[in-house]
Length: 193
Image 1 (cartoon, rainbow, N blue to C red):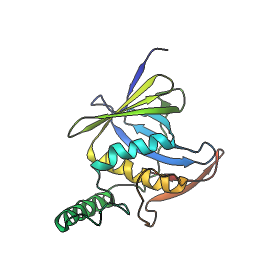
Image 2: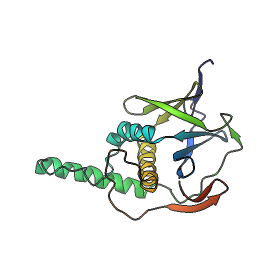
Image 3: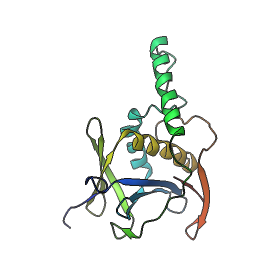
């Protein structure tokens, strides 16, 4: 099969408008839906291994607080700086819209959900994530800082529901901006926007 590339936000006229990440109990996977400005969407299955890899690649860019983010051996100055970064990340999350329900697009860029098998992150100020899928398709996404923060927040909440360990102990917190939904494939699925 020849390699195909699907650019989620490479062209200036096509941008990411919405993300939706939820845990599917029957598949024991996360389902990532990416709604694009050209009224299309990408649908990607994310396994436990890929979720861990995604967290490791992106979490360093967000400063989201976790139960073990400030180490006891950290100097007071480093602990204060870390706390300030985490407080800023939480403030930035509060400014984001997680309440608007995900709007499915009329067309999918792929013929069905793709299974992510590998991730590659590049770029400096705006990160570029390549998601290599089982079907020989590479999905490319430009991820500015607010999108990385939103994705990591959704990843934390989805992983908490799944019970997976992605390498960080998530701080207990009320689940903000979640909405319960049921469909034919899941008994009770929390959908995160």
